[in-house]
Image 1 (spheres, rainbow, N blue to C red):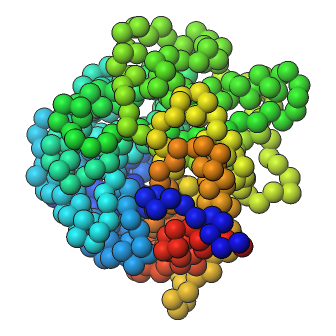
Image 2: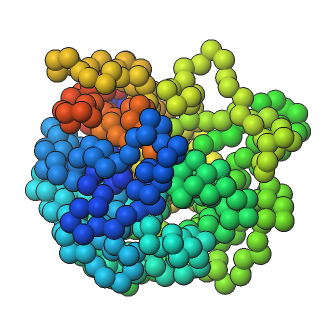
Length: 450
């Protein structure tokens, strides 16, 4: 049936990246180091010793990358700002060259008819602020609001959509609890403090935007629905704990002004008593929420796994990506329904969705077939259409990612891009998934029809 998967005419089609993963040149033109610059150059932290010194060289190649976006038909581009490129010490002195880079990028996007969507924080805290305690310091909310206001005043005349934080759960789980991501801490007591200060910072930035901005501001959460491995009460409780820890720990203080009770159960004595007044700051009115969806988790009770006492169970006979994530598009439908039920009818964007599958390091010719990624996109976009038909208030979709890039501590081996990058030569080659996504955009979803 023609038009079965058509999306609304004003639906926004885009793609997303982040600064440290693609920009390269992290210390040029007066920029300060970030915690990721420091972490990536710490021996043993990164797969294959990879780092973001060059990455996709987007800092120097942004004009041709924008032309690539235009060729794909992207209507919007979601990028992040390297805080330390603008404020080398994190506060105080502004680096004009850093600010100018993002101004030029925004102008280039607008010149090509692409709407800029700016994220203030995608994990790369200035190292100078980490030296002052980072997200463990309550002053971090003030630091972030100062930085945010600088960016709003510089770019809000041309940037209609702002995100405060991207995936704060990853920052605290990987950076403060398990030590697999920057800044590399492993401390049960630190994780909830960092999480709370991140949400205070987001609220402070939203307050700042209400004073100087005139468009839209929101926050982005990664949501991974948790399903119990069985109907046993222990497994059901384990799924609830995992859900509270990953999916509600940040959305609840931002949208409800509280924390779910399971967090105290998880952290025990490490769970602090936060001042009640903090929740007036964390709960600011947002214009939208971004949801990053990749996969689900089926979990069972496991007392040996501290602090959640829950462990994932790999599902047999299912497709899994190179990162070990199950391809499960029904989880997107379930996520959107549950989010609306708990938080109300807030406008939503799917701000990241994509998959890493094996692609060769070098492409011979100008064609790269990636059928598994095409299938992933098709499945999830059809699922999104189904969710919207059932009432999900989703306004747009951003594929992750525009380019193969530095997949954080996993290095360059995990490729999420619609566009292949040969990291030795920086040659860009659109994959079959890029061509498919371009067809979806051009047809308003019609290319998803059987």
